[in-house]
Length: 247
Image 1 (cartoon, rainbow, N blue to C red):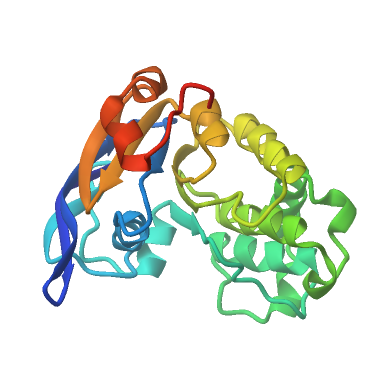
Image 2 (image 1 turned 90 degrees about the horizontal axis):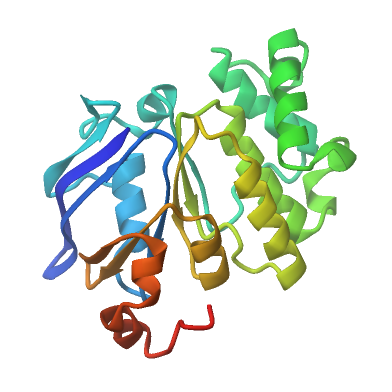
């Protein structure tokens, strides 16, 4: 469903991504792990089209999308949620979801005040709000809701574009243990037709949701396999300087 072939990116003399090759099957849940500076976010920026690679290719459903900008990748089914909130604080939760759904319905250039007037947009908003547990907060202004709800909304906005592949950059960043457990349940309940690629620092979440784990270190793939194999990998324990046996 999503594939990279020898993806490489440098900033000046620093090579941040080194020949990264990955292949995600439809419906797969893959978690990317790695220490700070491993190149995880740069890889996501390359996949989403926010950065152009120096060499290599990105393919979506067999189509080479390496040269496509962010918006055209999104229209082909590749969506992303960010580590930091990128929401419209002055609008309601419902209106934020409506804007994303309107883009999917082909009315992205219309004023946001009109987006919720369309039945197909309202249908998507209602479905996504239920999926990410936002129904009680639909009419609240984003500036007034908790950080945890904003994180849920970030995922909801991405889902409202009806992606086939969703890139999630540390969805539990900055939330407490209870909210993190809620994200575990949220991710587990997402439809299996959706392919997920997740950057995550929470080991419990990584091992809980992943079908496959990929580990980056200094921009290179140093491990790619099943969670059970990752748990017992001495190389991974050395990279993280800790013991994951209790993770």
